[in-house]
Image (cartoon, rainbow, N blue to C red):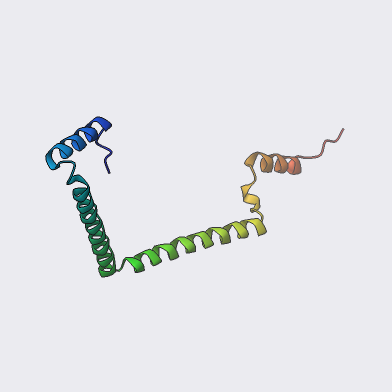
Length: 111
């Protein structure tokens, strides 16, 4: 929340606040400020919840979750299929096939 303020700036703000408000009214002022911050936070949370209900965020989240689950299931299905069915012979390197075919088609050596 106060990431842009350094410790010196915060100390200066506290000192000026203490001088302006005075030490006897400072606890009451801080309490009132805390109450207003809580009300503001609850108000923003309520507005967020209402907005999410209006646009149907629950449905959108559910749909995104379902899509991710379906994608994971598809990946698992593909992995299982690849494990059960070995790759076809066309995935062998070409060098092995040409060497085997050269051995089979060459005429036998006769002396």
